[in-house]
Length: 325
Image (tube, rainbow, N blue to C red; front, top):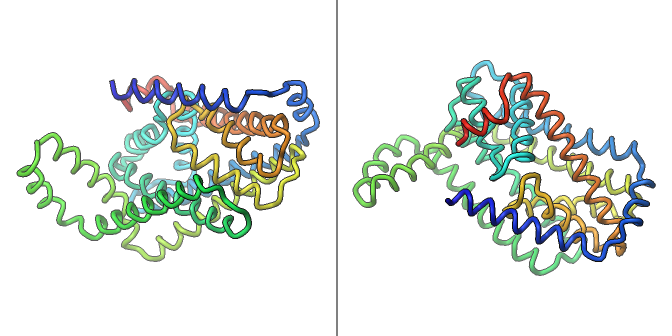
């Protein structure tokens, strides 16, 4: 029932944001913007986006340094399969899909994989917040967005502190489990301990300072490349936006992805991209052309690469969904 409610809420929000993005649009002008777009720049931006996934794969391999025989091409394959699952399956099953695959195929342990991905999310959030803080020196960020950023900064710092504490106190989890079982219902205690073990098993990287530095540098490089890809796409659609505008669009659409939505972030992505571009692009039709075009390029990359590696792994989306469920 909870999953159904989440799906319905996501679908309703997607429809709402899609309506907000498409209202008062002249499709003839949108079509003109597509026809005048520079294909070479659109393809270049897409290649840069895929390049950021390669960096993400290197980072994930570094986080899973304990797993023997795991290669970067394996982590890249599972990342793309996760993106495919997020694109075509409800409830954003991508993270669970790649955790399940790497746990079964590489004996990495699903808990360890989930913990490493939790650390990925914390690092990504910190990088996006850092970009937003840098942008605040160049542009006036609207008050609602600043309030949201403040909340996310607090959440990211709390999560990061929690991961560090768990990493340095794994030997105390057994005692904590016994104590929780005494003060709360057993099922609740078991769920809490499952989450804590997932996080702690993925936070072992904090015991290796050199690896922590590597994760931070890889995270910064990845988001820098995505920001440049966004800027190249903007130039491909001939929009007059300053260089830092691409990073503002990046922050908006990625922080907005935390909202529930339909598969592929349909509607949410489009509205937030148009909203971010409205600071410099008064023509909603041109901004919507960018939003639809870049979303399509992103989805094509997700589906194309994800389907290729899914076939290579010899599994189907039905298998993944059944295993995740």
